[in-house]
Image (cartoon, rainbow, N blue to C red):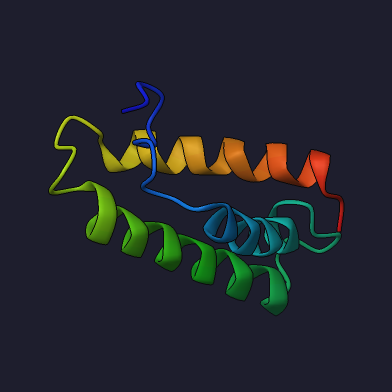
Length: 85
């Protein structure tokens, strides 16, 4: 298990790629208050919570949602640096 918030194998590369698209739409939006940016952020947060509840919460009780969410955001930034949209 990673001590950085995402247990090994809990989140796939495909999950990160999907999350990164949503993350890009709100984190780097020219109009962060736009409907599109707000919808993307809502979808991102919903998906992060779903992944946490389904894959992490029960199996890795020491990983908090806050730590998991923070690491997911970092992984999205890293993914976008390596794979610009």
